[in-house]
Length: 264
Image (tube, rainbow, N blue to C red; front, side, top):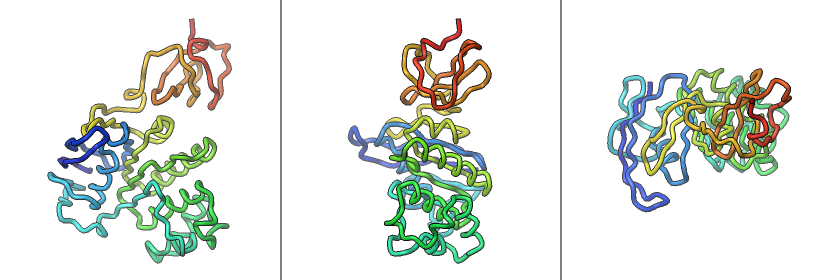
């Protein structure tokens, strides 16, 4: 259990504001944090990691982390810019965290990086670098995994692949994961719970369907899930659940005009 009751003065996108968060996160939960840029999402992750200070309390499994050293927090953090060591190979980046070759080989295999382990980061694609950053985050066997826009700027095929790999690692290691993301498809496919922040405060809390649902029926959307005669469609940052006629054949990834696929 993670309990966050924190307050911190920030300068956000719309000027000065106060980050005020009262949040409890269950062990093993995959929590997505959404909201506009400058709402305090990344700052919240950095406070939990001990990289920034704030008033209030951070309590993990009954232990206060007020003055708890960063290196003892058992946290894996994947930054937006990857944060890889450019002078080290893929394998060396992992072993720098922990000298555990068995675990490193296992993570390289899971993320399909074994054949690239001797390569330097500057020879890798963006998707490959992201996989290295994910694998490295798990080298400390973290209790808590923090992901800050982990799939931004990736093409749809690589995004879908890494969504599956992140979820696989989250489940295999049994960690609690907090992910900052603006992308509703990332959130829907991975998160068990979503909170939305505005100007430093949590304004919505629930499942992806509860948080992003809308009743709009005249927009173009991407099909995320097909279940018999019901589909989940992504429109911008909104998730819409539709009932469709049985004669409509839809597949994941299709782009549809919603009003044309409503059941009558």
